[in-house]
Length: 427
Image (tube, rainbow, N blue to C red):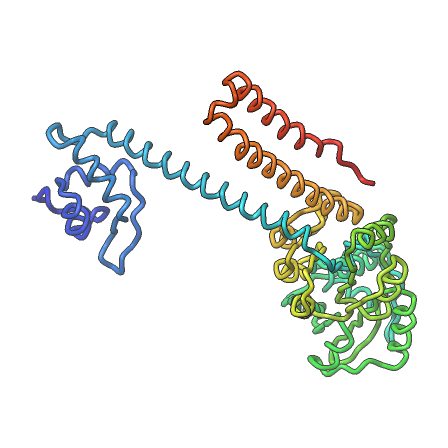
């Protein structure tokens, strides 16, 4: 026979020794409370379940409700619902306060920013790359390079990989073979096993240092020519040798040069920061009017570049769209993500530019600056008005009618001043 002080497997004795004693309540009340699912106890090192202090406080209130009448399940449910609603309201208020505080910091940052760092692919360029060329060493056809490299790249989400995979499928006209043991080496390349071959596709330096695969002179010359033309070249190798080079090209956004001009007019110094090669980076930078270029950096190197600028006293904004930009966006004083970018970049940024257009970046910064100016203007008016009017009203120099009219005018002024933002548009 089970004693009312003993509990089942779902309600072990440990619960009674902790919860019932602290709450000063009968075990049956506690059991009923648990039975209708009003607590979510966690496991405690093999001793059964235990309740949080919040649950214990709720149990005490339940005890007062049911002290002389037994367990009133509907009353218990009502009390718990009230507790939950109150907790939810408190969390929402805390989140709102945090968002307001963050918005204030972001608005202040837009005013202080003096340097804007921009990613290349997907930010200054469209990010919609296409395969421009494929070359192979003697004895290996270009189609063979496309087949194996395209299969590995098909499993990657990088824009260069997508371009190679799409180009391979278009040229070969059939499905690519399956890849196993796929691995993405962020900022360096990809690897996998295709048709029994260990295939690697990526940077020349990575293939040479990590895979001991030397770049043939002919392929190196082909890649150098492509980079001088502003294109991106990656190498493909398998079975211990580099077998081919793949060249992809991107298109500069039509509005990128105009956006850079506007950023300069706002007093910002643009810097191009990219993991792409120096030649391609310089070609794009010259086309849009950027003088300072940092090229060939890994994702960690982008963070270091941002820190270097900050250490020199610069207040840095970063604009990016890819997974490789996320850490740099978080490091920057102000991170702006392109709305067409990856979830990782958007999550790491402070502001998201919904349009996939670089011209929206100066608009966003200018709008933020004007918003901050209006906020400060409204605060100055409100404080000045009250500082002047309250003493006059207290000393009897203002009639209640005039004071009420002045208060109404103050509210109308603040609202009207804020509505000026509705007329905001690109200059």
